[in-house]
Length: 306
Image 1: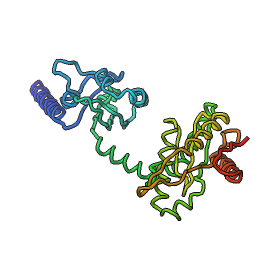
Image 2: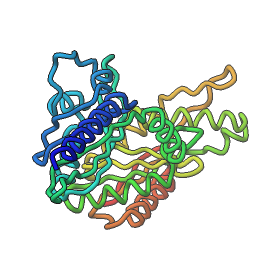
Image 3: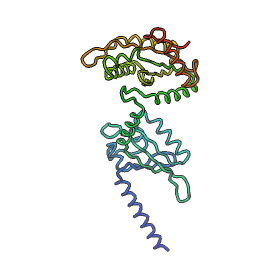
Image 4: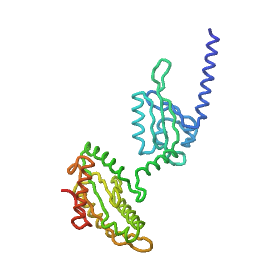
């Protein structure tokens, strides 16, 4: 019985060698982690990707340090949850390459069990999907942006407001909503042409976006009407911001076809969640009512719901 055992060991050794060759020559990053989540193996492609020297030990810490700082907590949490449930996972994050560029990676892992069925950890692969990710992002941007002004479109604004209301309900904060309309917009098109009207829309869109915070959302709601969502803004703040927008819009200079167009003014209506509405439709309706009131009162002003 000894000889067959020797043959079996030989076959196992040869198989192990072949698997090692395959792993080291694979065009993607391959890794293994034990049942505690500690990474103990990365193939040679990892060294090529990160530029790690041959004498540097490859472990989970080298992977963590290469993660984009903004992606670290999310990636680690996702992997820990998968390990706890012993389920397959796929996550996307940014990883620093040897030249300092962060690349988008698709990381997938599968639980590994021994012959007795005991959980031994994970085996996985990390694939560079930067070009695909950028193409998908470009398509997404096209789907949520107004092509003329590059502001967000109406659909994105409505969806974003719904999401923000859910967060605000949970975390107990206010949301300001502004509806903004260009006063006497039709004469721009009638007297100077539609391209002049487009120039006014583009200039105002840039002005509105430049005067908002990173967390605010500005959209072209339709025609010459824009909307803005301001998380954390109460009535006082909303009134201050809206009044300032009206004042600064008057000083905008829009040039078209070698001439300066007439002064642009705007009317604004505003409402605040949760006082003026518990959902996006109610908030927009109330803000629209204030917009009409501002126009009826002579335009070039902001009215916020009481």
